[in-house]
Length: 461
Image (cartoon, rainbow, N blue to C red; front, side):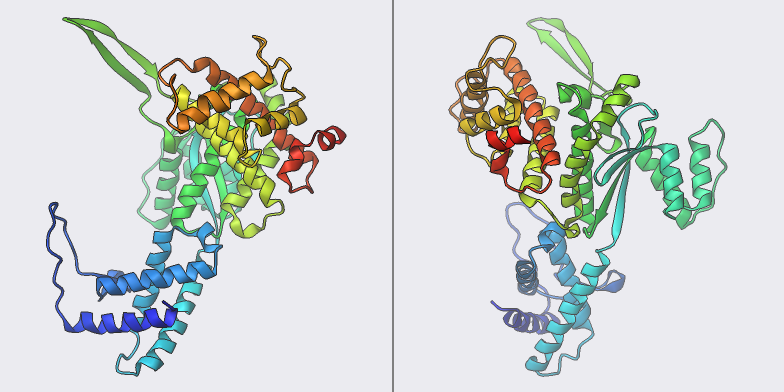
């Protein structure tokens, strides 16, 4: 149905809602609390509506999104539907419904579309997501930047926030006092006080602050995309380790932290058999030394490549220069992150395979071997592992024998120990990810994924 047809339906249903009392639907096997449907208005009020009217408004929203695909990068579908319902509520409440339907349809369409444009424009401002995190202990390596994601000490963040007018001088002074041994006096309730309280709640006991610069995203998209960008930035930093999962053990957003200690108890037949306790997450960032500081600086050019992919994710209006390459790098980093955080060896192995998969356009094990030969120099028959396993043998085991069979439900060894194959998959996935980022750095004008697997081009680079 067209927009005009949907508006006519909305008019019919609006008049019906004003004439007829609302009758709740018959209760099903599970009773739910139901309220009369309505279009939201300013001040928390609602304009009476019907379920059919709300469905028509949702269909109007879908047409609007279909005509502007970039909205899918900026809004959650449900969130945009709510925005459209607010537009209809505001416009319908201001009109004289005694006018002809033809006149009303024109006024409603013009008013609703303008209201939507205005609301979208309001969502177009730059918003900085801020949260405490554990990364490395404070040292001279900060700030660390991975595209739109910045990691700073508390002092660095306060100074920058003050210069950018994000916080007041009073709030800056009180934050510094709070993070020092001195006692802080009480403060009267105000908007500034709530900002101070929110900063302290988001940063908590963390010495390091993670910030993500977003642009043009809705409220729910900011939370979803900024959180993922923060996690992927930590994974990019963790690629400095031969086993990135070991680096990530010390890295976490305060937002993501769980109980510090986990414990379970065991009982055998007729007796207590013992218990086990473990630390679920490290209590602080990883210790630092001169070698680590040097590594962070040496890897900065690679962080910039990962950062470009993250820019495309949290700032969709910024423009993408190499969409194919950046999409592949982002997806590979995402799968690598998920694998590193995965507790199950079976699932982690599958996700590490997916990380390699993303760099070869989702092809097969043969394509991954060609990529490895081009980027890392290991031919299919060359020994790749310390135990002498060839490239073909280990990739076939990871990709075909383990990953594919597990996904397709034909695995016969899913209950076996996969820890050794997980370790191999992580090491190879990390090498592929880092080499891909380095190749993209050296070939900044190329946006053809196949060329990364071309031995001739790679050798010439």
